[in-house]
Length: 147
Image 1 (cartoon, rainbow, N blue to C red):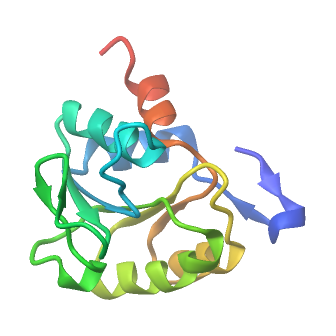
Image 2 (image 1 turned 90 degrees about the vertical axis):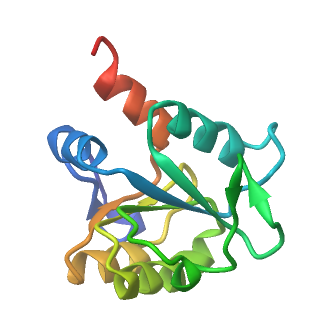
Image 3 (image 1 turned 90 degrees about the horizontal axis):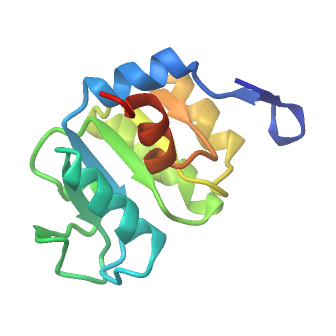
């Protein structure tokens, strides 16, 4: 994986590490999930549901999305979360990552264009697998196609 020196020197996990976290995860909290099927967050979350993941919406502005109850923040979710998938501005990523650490998530995934070296370092320091500026749908398709 490439290193991005202008963005703080972070390095995404190897394809094997990404494969393992996707393979061994069951529940994904999607922060910023929109109920609008034309929005990327909705399309990607729907794809993840179709792949067998439990997707939990995190959006204080909606009651539900994709047939699942929405929660105002990560701390309000009453069950364990494997991956926190972020569809918010980069400036929101550090606080979301701190909450992911607090709830015991195993990974934080910042979607394409969500670049926050601060959040990346916070999560890494806490022992979370951190993925930044990558699309979970694209990575899943690339790693699991043909299976």
